[in-house]
Length: 106
Image (cartoon, rainbow, N blue to C red):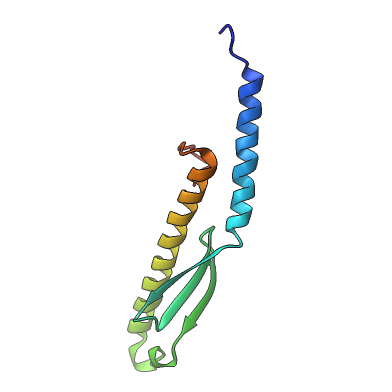
């Protein structure tokens, strides 16, 4: 194709990849929180959807009702991960200029 500089496009793609990788490193340090049971269960995850901490209020630790604690933990983890995924997608879209690039934006 006359007038198309493939090297230019390759350099731009490499720069974009580098920016996105740098942003992912930064996201690993950012944290988001999910809660359940009126805040009695709190889960903190990073921007890469890794669980960092789980905090439980003493009143949710009832040996007679383990199922409730399991449900609260599941809800809090899912809430934190959903927040983290949305944040990561938003941040990657900023870097990629809104382009949906498989393998880079998720």
